Image (tube, rainbow, N blue to C red; front, side):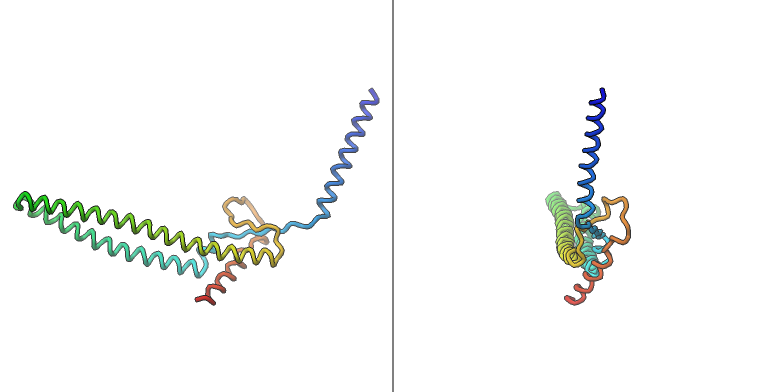
Length: 181
């Protein structure tokens, strides 16, 4: 009986010594420095981000203007059909109906194509901005000897404000954009 007790006690002592030896290595190793960057804030609050939004809004307004013009033309054809449909000959009425359907399809196609093009352009601008910001984050991370920089706040429940480098990255990004502009 006593031998089992001493074996257990000996095993527990060895286990504690084993754990302590690893903990001393862990505590004596290099420290870990973590940073956080709010990418959405940089994309939304940067000068380049504001310029990109203005560019996209300008394209949207231009597209909406063209779309309204095309819709007006289609509506004119439909109004003509509704007003004069009963007095038009069968062949002329069918031709006008065909013209209206064609115009309506063109309007729908234009709207779809414009939406896809505007989304593509927005994605292209965002991708370029993310690349630029990523390069800056890497520079800051190396310069300030970060072990890791987390690029989004969305998955984090809490972090100390002292590890947030968003404003530093935003300032560098804006300064570089001003120089290029």
